[in-house]
Structures are given as C-alpha cells and as structure tokens.
Length: 357
Ligand SMILES: O=C(O)CCC(=O)C(=O)O
Ligand SMILES: [Fe+2]
Image (cartoon, rainbow, N blue to C red; front, side, top):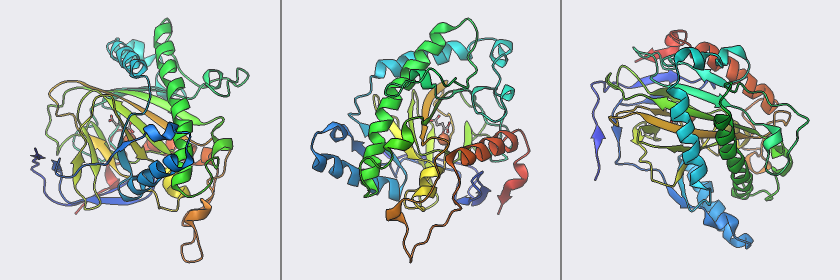
C-alpha cells in the first residue's frame, strides 16, 4: 500500500553538498509511491559471459537512472552481517567515555573511529543529526584475495574488545570478496572489459561503518537521523534493521526505501559519478528514524585504491561529451572530502550553506 509521511514544511529547499553541487527537494515529506529497482544478482556468479552481461545491463540502467537499487540472491553470508550488528549494539551501549577513547578526532584525516551522538549537522537543521557511528578502514592483512601483512592498518580499535574487531573484520572480508566481483559487473555495465578495474582494487578503499540511530522524537522538519548527503567512493552496500533510509528522486521527492530482509541496498557514490562523467548518478540520501525504535545500519564503502587517478572511463567521454571533472588521484579526492566533511559537518559550521528559498 502506498503511504506518504506528511511534513509541515512544503517549501522547496536547496542545499549545498560537500561535493560542491546543490540539490533541491520540493517538499520534506517522504513517499512509498516511488520505489528503487530490485535486481537479482545471482547471475554475477554465472560462468556464462552472456548472463553476466545481461545482469550488467540491468545494473547499468539502475545506476544511470536513480543510482540506488536493492540486490537479492547475492550469496553474502548474512550471519556475518548479524554478528557485526550484534557487536554494534554492544559497542554503542558502552559508556560515552569508553567510546571516546577511540574518537575519530584522534586521526583528523581519516574517518575511522567513533563519531559521537549529535555531532554533525550537514543540512543546517534546527537540531543536529541523531546518530552515532564507528568507522573502520581497510586492513590489508585481512584481504581475502591479496593479504598483505607488511602494510599496517590505519584504525582505532577499542581496547579489550577482541570480538568486536574480529566480527567486524570478518564481515568486511566477506564484503571485499563480494565487491570485487560486483566491480567486474559494473565494468561490463560501462561497456569496458570485465577486468577494467582489477588492478585498481587490489588495495581498495573498503571502509565500513556501524551506525546507531535512536528513535527520533523531534519532527522531520527539525532533525535528521543522518542529513542529506552523497557518499564519497565508488559504491556503497548497506544493510539495516529498520526502515528510515530516504532517497531523493529525479523529481525532487523523498522516496522511503523499505528494507527487504536478507537483501542489500547498493548506491553509486561520487567518485564513480565523476569517473563516468555523470553517467552513473550519485544520488542524495538521508535517514530519518520514524520507526518507533532504535535503528542500526551497516554501510560498506567501496572504492579504487588511493594512488589511482580518477580519469574518465573511455566509454563515458567523447568530443560531444568531454570530461567535466579535473583528474586527481582517488586518494586526494577521499582526503579532500574527509577533511571537508569532518570540519564543515560539525555543529553549525555548515548552516550558512543551507539556502532557504
Ligand atoms: O543508515 C543508513 O541506512 C545509511 C547511512 C548512510 O547513508 C551513510 O552512512 O553514508
Ligand atoms: Fe550515505
């Protein structure tokens, strides 16, 4: 059945994103009248190239039109996700002082570590975003395909909680294996050879985060769970235990994404949009937790390694459609965004970037 969550604020708003672009939504209400595509990805494991190509064409369309889709029959062991979720609940239940021992402020140029409750306000709303999070980076030693114990991880793991690191890392290892395969399908979707990205994902950007959203009491016009934003890297794979994710449609309306048990939501992020010269769209999204209970989510952020140049994919540029973006390394881009977001999303600093029309 279709539903629309009403909002007292029906005036269009324009907000500046940290990627420098502006986006507008026509109303702050959200609807289930529009949906995101559901794609059965079992064919990604097929030995037949034609099957993989057929899947790639479906992904091509979804990545081009809306930049968000739900995947079924992915083959990921969901026990690993539930174990990570269980650890998330335990971690967030710890005293604030214990969580602050691994504060993300300790490493300013990385996202890893703990981000405290109501710390950021990316949209300049009345109240700060109602979430806390813990991020962890790729650990080369635990790569399932190219393990490398000689390159140290950059992470802030809490002391005396070995199960926390173990369970979170086990999920990460599974997701890396999956993301490498999905990257090959994305290459086919761009009509380049399947191995186009293989060399660039041997030391990938493969960070994860656990998020905890308390039940929101304030109205949706005054507070977000996590404010509207776009992700930074190539694609994100999300699992969550409750509704709350909202995606901005092309027509400027918020679509409520209904989580399907056992499935993941995949979305295109900014580096992929840049590299495809906007052919794939990195769509604005946010979370508002009106589920009436706490919400936990587990996004996995996947991108090419830091030293690779974000030069355009050959099939996405032509004389008529020249590259729109300056070329830089993925690492420089990630660093620029990390610095910008950790600074400007802090309380109040971004409010001036919100243009009320
Ligand atoms: O909690 C979610 O479902 C999404 C979180 C998100 O968009 C993010 O952390 O970038
Ligand atoms: Fe996101």
